[in-house]
Amino acid sequence: MKNPNTNQSGLSLVEILVALVISLFLLGGIVQVYMGNKTTYRFSDSSARVQENGRFALEAIATDIRMAGFTGCYSLIEDENGDGDLSDDNPYLFNQLDFTAGADYDFVDQPAVDATNTAGNWTTTDTLTIRGAQTGQTTLTADLDPLTDPVVVSAANSFSVDDIVLITNCFSANIFQISSVSADQTTLGHGASAGTPGNTSDGFETSIPVSEYRSNSASIFTLQEITYSIGVSTSGSGEPALFRTLNGTNEELIEGIENFQILLGEDTDGDGSANQYLERDSVANLQNVTAVRLWLVVRSDQDFVVDAVQSYTINGNDVTPADRRFRQVFSTTVALRSKAG
Image (cartoon, rainbow, N blue to C red; front, side, top):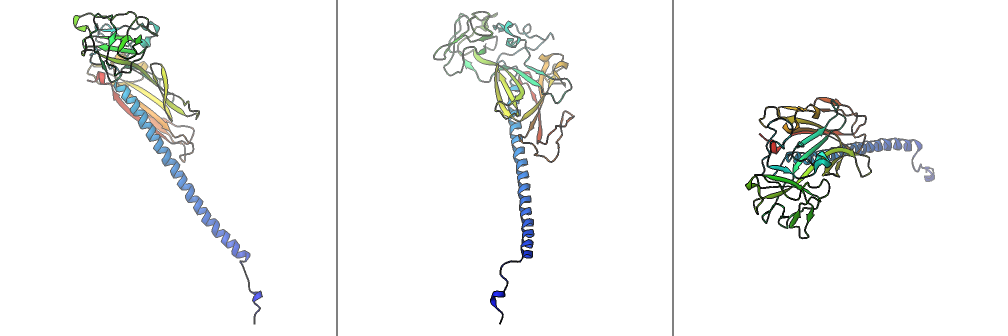
């Protein structure tokens, strides 16, 4: 009878080695699946973020472009004599601002849309400036007679001291800076002592009787100058970001916007539609700009998202970055509503 103590117990070295090899194959497969899923997740997450940021930025810019040149119910007469100024074409639109403090305060003759370009360069980012009235209006609740009286409006408004506004009754219009606001928000002053740029006089100008401002027939709009540009995010991430400067106050909108390119659509035959899209310095008369064509390049916040360097195209021009971030180009053409044909 065989001694039971002589029977083998446990695993041999060969069996252990075979088990380890099989385990390594299984572990390698698991790691491979994990890495594949991680790569897919990173790409999907980056793609979703890029698309979300791009759509948001595009919609924000397009909304402001559509309002460029808006002056309420006052119909702005275009540059009929082609001298680049509108003041001589609009005898009933008065700018009360002391815009000697800076051309930016000349809301009459300064173009509704302006831009900066680096000629022929599709990698150096552009800037876009938009001027006009904000949507929404406040109606006068008392006659402005004489025209040196304070402006009386409903309490449902958000006016502040130093706001630049336009008052119009659809026949004439005055641009001025609010010098004082009563505690109940119903009385707006327009004295010459307003802050920068200040008003040149205490009273409004008028050339025809119907230009007087009456209760419930005259409205006030806040004027705005907006500039879009690309800068480094203030969050400390070091990422590029889209900035929106409203009347001198700079605000970061969203990260990941790497490049911003602009072409201005010029109407050369007076039909209200753009005939050609040009860089700013090639536009003969900025007052004839009726549309803006723009491109935004949005990138992922992480590198090594794509397998190889990803090139992209702007207006037929190829650009090759130096990293492996995921990028997407967003583009649109926006017409100015105030100059629609």
